[in-house]
Amino acid sequence: MDGGSFESALDRIDVALARLEQAAAKLSSEDPGLRDRHDKLKTSVSQTLEQLDVLISGQG
Image 1: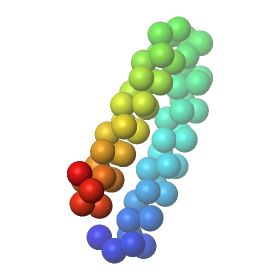
Image 2 (image 1 turned 180 degrees about the horizontal axis):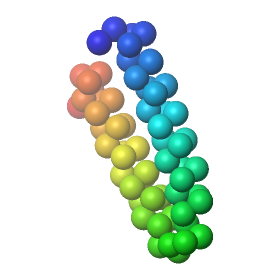
Image 3 (image 1 turned 90 degrees about the horizontal axis):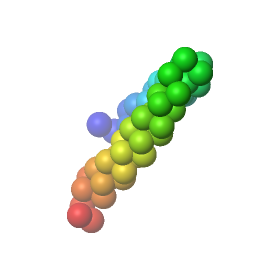
Image 4 (image 1 turned 90 degrees about the vertical axis):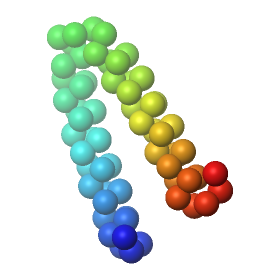
């Protein structure tokens, strides 16, 4: 994957994440625990992506 494709993929992920966050905010009033679960998932995904970045860059 070249740099442009990689950046494009990251942009699409950011857009999808924003849509998910909007939906989660709307639904959180219907399910009080949803926000906590969403935040935990978001943190977990972020940490995993950071680990992948380290592995891909050859520093891990």
